[in-house]
Image (cartoon, rainbow, N blue to C red; front, side, top):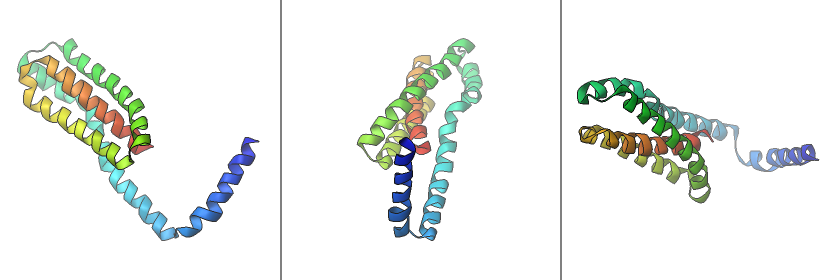
Length: 145
């Protein structure tokens, strides 16, 4: 039964939707998506580069290595929560507004971490861990889907 439903949907797509779009417009749209998604995913991958940031921050402010490694754990938890929330946000709002929301959270997280890191490790937990992690999760889920 399910195979018949999928077959019917596939036939409708082939007969109704695709003839209205030319092959060239489909190729251009795919190329545009690729050109936008690749740099976006590279920026979102900065969250995984925590080990590069942790060593100089630990040396600069004499923070314990275990406290710094927990920042990454907090960011991964926020990333997962952001991924779950991102799909719900994309349902209510447009994909473009969801990506803008993710970019704003990520930018605030990174900028605040860079400027206020001297205030203590709690700033890293809050801004890098929670804000940047949550924004990264929203953005990654939206772009991949």
